[in-house]
Image 1 (tube, rainbow, N blue to C red):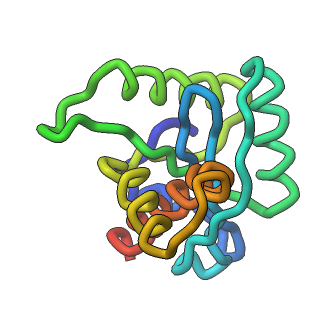
Image 2 (tube, one colour; image 1 turned 135 degrees about the vertical axis):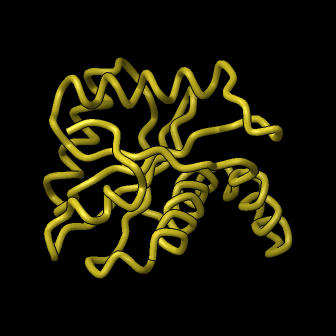
Length: 152
């Protein structure tokens, strides 16, 4: 497989397969899982980045264990919709994943996802330490939920 249009990604999945949302950062990768009906995104885990091979091994262990049929990678577009260096990094991460395994993959606009999640956590009076622990996987859930809602 390769990079797909978001609607084509959902159409390519078997009935009981989930989607895995990724918020790819320089130090961590936040993960969120959809339910099997692909209507609800739930924060799942955070991978603390090391070498790409180790990150990919961890990621694919989760893909296999959770019945994931496709990946949604958050694409950190600039506010004007252009792609900068962070987008290039995420696209390269996706290309590296596809070089290892043939899995459907789509990119989704993630502008302000981390900011929105952080704001929500602050409003909930969450401590800085707790915010640091959960913000990446919650941002992944925010990205994945946006994808699920938009692609119905």
